[in-house]
View (cartoon, rainbow, N blue to C red):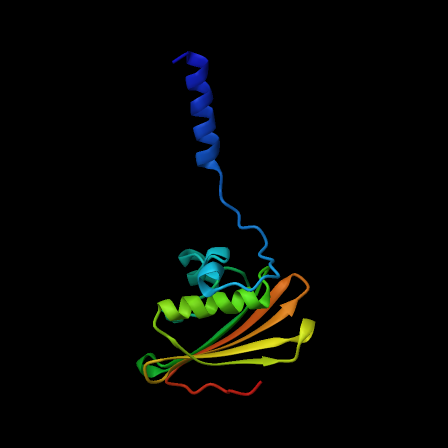
Length: 164
């Protein structure tokens, strides 16, 4: 193989290998399945999660990558507690809802109800998940100008407020 071909191959490998994959904004008007949504949205990387999420949030709780705007913990003796976080994402509310449903199903959480309040740009999706006895998650997902905002409440041994 000629020397210039080897140099070109090495240069190409270095450029491709050194690139970081950046997820494009997630925008789709077509309905997606949880499996498709899990391909469109990445989970929050572990190092970011430990630095921006509330202390003690169980790792079995799915969290998508996004911009965290609030993170609060109310840890109680024995591992019980209440964790709240808000995040923003470029995903549409429907894609984000399907991502959570897929991620929670994989972690053996049971979707107990889904509610939609309103329609169009003011619509809010509210999901409730349970795992075992005493583990609950409530998600409020609403549309924003850039995608969606998620308000999440996670309770272990602490009942969640189920009002919209």
